[in-house]
Length: 506
Image 1: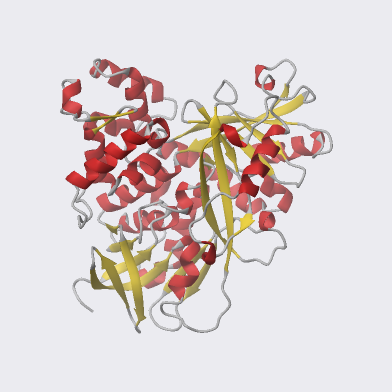
Image 2: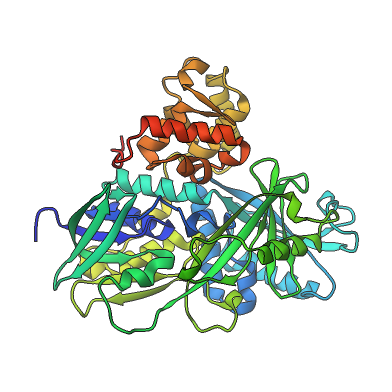
């Protein structure tokens, strides 16, 4: 073994991979994480953006998963109140669907399985009298309002990765693991980055490659073992805002599934999701015409004004890497995570299947505990009370923080300050630390995006291209013209060399 030996190498820069990297680095371990593309460039930026217990999983008897997720909602809310916040969900009662008594029973369990200190309890509502019933079809008379949380999913990944790096982890994006050699006491990882291939050594390997867990396994295990993944595509549509208010809707469908309609990016509504089988042969996940029709028809069953394909302004799709439990329907495959730990044929390897954004911290802790003997560490739950970068303020303190910074930088539009605090929390003060005039913000690209923010995201959040910023670390691309988006891409071409390596975090 060499001095450069890593304790732990992680393949995959989605939420599971960065969560494990953060937990391990916080314990003083020497950690390497490699991601072939950008952080959260696949599954972890294509979610429905919810930190939730998963109400529908109750009817599939996944009580353990729901309890685990419900307990995590307020843990994550306290850790990152800038990018996670409470949201009320309106569930209409509809004829021919689950009866009101069954919904009320499920919501009673939902309120009590995981405990609540911050989120309000479920209430019955009269949709004829409550303004939240106004956008809905008039046949809908009764409903329930319950609580979950919204999350900026890709920002959760980049902030978790940043926290891991600040604790000493080596985070490499645009770095593909092209080969794995398993020795008796360590792994050799062959990593291609910037046109060069280097070999790194690690005592333990974690395969957190999401939809590509099976292909990564095949790099070192060429046996004929059956694949363990069930790949399911989920797609969303973004339309012009369908209703006023900051609440969301959850609609029951005739096929037994549900969809959400959620306020999105100020003047839009997000509608999703679907469940369709997916295979590697299909290439990058994209929404199909059938999925578009499904989502439009399902939403139109409830909204007074129908949703049509012409209303769609953006779509996104992702692949869920679920553990294949041989369920007949993609909708009923377990959403809980499953570990495959192999420490008998040489250096240890832990492969991860499934998982949800809501339970990523618990998954990381369980992964560390699974590897505790191999890594010679204990399994204390240090992340439970640790803030993510910018999240060191009270869950109900967001507006006060906006007021504070708007007063400190009065020459900036309040809507810009609001967006910056939503993205960066208390780090907004550091980002704007040297700004005395609007000119100090640098070039303006539209939609409130300035050069100072681009440089921040490059220096601290591993951004390497326009898409990383416009569609993952923010959704500003949705608010910009084609010419404005092109200007951001041109800025990157001029200011960031193609072979640039990852930034050093300060």
